[in-house]
Image 1 (cartoon, helix red, strand yellow):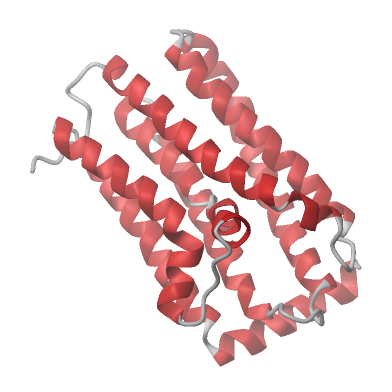
Image 2 (spheres, one colour):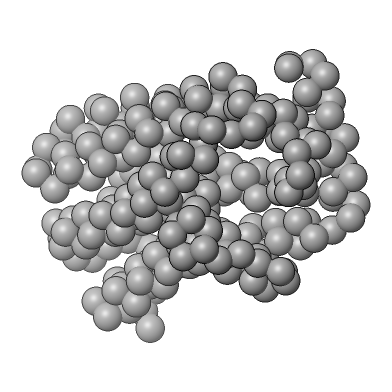
Length: 249
């Protein structure tokens, strides 16, 4: 297998398959949140307002991502590059609002049956992965093939909530062991990572940046699963959530 650091193929050759990855990504995320919409609207206790703001910001981010892919698909690369700076600023805001929203939701539901403060590890890992990869992807913008793959990896790393909701609300699955929990939360991202890898292997386009990013995502996922079942992390996250609740709710 040949590893590339720059694409020695036309950037147009990656466009149509990137559109397919986007369709699969959106199908999983939209299906998951659509299936959970009734539960979200009738949660007890009601979610803090920042959670609704987070939902709006995330929806707009999905639209931004779609527009960026379509701009390239329809050969408007010039505007794609200009709009990319707006997307960069939105991504930074999204990270802050997502962290605020998650901590506020956790604080509101700290004593709700069925919730555990250890869950904080999962969104924290997702946001760390997204922040790292989106930054790297922006720095790679002059390396089109690597830029495209790393930016998409950043989005794969935050599809956990949508994919897990598909398994819970559509297929009515749950988990009881760490291995089951790993696949419950991360099966969606793992499927997309595998499909992307198989496609690039078939086309002999496997990039070093893609492999590094994919390994980074999976490594963080393994770490978050370890923390999720770790009593020390549970105590620590409870203390963080309680402190957040005292000062913000």
